[in-house]
Every structure is written in C-alpha cells, then in structure tokens.
Image (cartoon, rainbow, N blue to C red; front, side, top):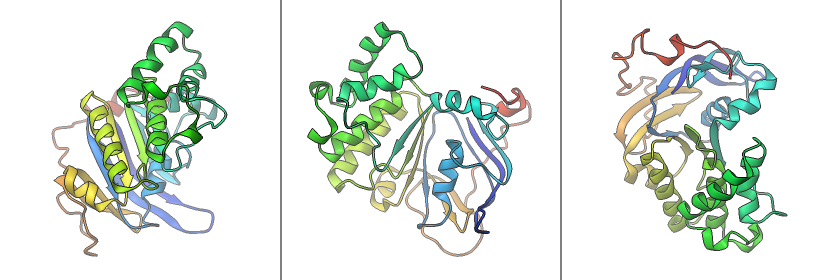
Length: 256
C-alpha cells in the first residue's frame, strides 16, 4: 500500500528532516506516526501527499512510484487519497453539504452520484442534520468531522491525517479517533501523525516512532513509544513474507 524505500529529505537550509527511512504500511492497517516536534514525522506525511519531494529514495503508494510522477499527475494522485489536517481547511463561504460535495465536483463526479454520496457520508460522520450549516456555525469537533467527510467522500484507499486532534478538547479528540477507527474497519488504510500519547496508548495500534529524521521504533499493538535515545529500531515490523513477487511496486511503473 505505502512504502518508503531509503528516503532522505534535506531542505535548502541544510537541515536533514528525514534520514534514510524505509518502511511499509500494508493495506487496511491503522498506523500512528509519533515523535517530538521537529522529528521529521510531518515531513514524512507531506511526502506521502506529494507536498514535499524527497532528496533521494522512492515512495510507492498503491504500487505507484510517486517520486517519479509528473506535476500534472499530482492532482490524480491526491484524488486517490483522503487528507485531514489539524486546521480543518474548510471553505467558510460554503455549507457543510457544499464543502463535502466540492471534493466530488473537482473530479467531475456525476451530479446524481454527488446527491447520493454526500448525504451517506454526512450520515456516517453524524452531521446529516447539519448539512445546511456553515462552518462558523459548528464546533471544532464538528468542523473536523466535515473535513473527514470531505476526505472520504471519494472512497479513497488511504486516509492520511496530520495531527487531526491537535486543536480539539480531549473528549472531542476521542470522538474523532473513534470515527477514524470506524473508517479503518471499513477497509481504508489510515495513517495518523500525532502527539496525543493518551490516544495512542489506549488504541493500541501499530506505532512508528521517529527521532531526528529516522525511525527508531516500529511496534505492533503498541502504546506511545518514548524516546530512549538508543538509536536502535525496536521490534521492527517483519516483512519477510513480502517478496519481489508480491510487493506491489514490483508490478507497476510510475504513473497514475
């Protein structure tokens, strides 16, 4: 589903944000990426979204080497994934319904499908009764639910969430994480970057911990991994069952 193969990112300032990271996220997984501010996790997320280009290495999503696709193909790549941000990024001059429908209109979806799909997704996130509200009439948690509805309305294979609960109170944060868990159970791969130790501890999903641009721990069914400063990857995920014959990137070339 998602593979980072020996990825390094050095910014023009000379800062090495990511250093030789290799990891694989399988279809249907729910994965937390954790680490302190400046550790490199946001850069990893941005590279998945094609907002930031790696300095070296390759990133594969659904078998496509996204480090090789042309700029004109980036919109098509992003349409295959759902993206949720900490600051929601809603259109405040549009209603809840219009915000979600917009994500379908930009890919020129059939109007009949839009009329059917948007209410279904709003029902899933618990906002069908607020379809005609504007974002400034909603709470922070409700705004994030709209953002999630917009992210999943086109049935993406993967949902990427960068600090999705960062601006929310604890109770609302739990509601959002419960919603993401429900979406994952429906088959969507979910990748969440977060500082929320209590959430990570309770949900017991796979946790990839990053420090100084490198992965230093990768554990299944784990709580928040503290920085022990050993420089050793603890309990790395075993991919021995994935060979060159069944790795997705072995079968497809770049392109969307």
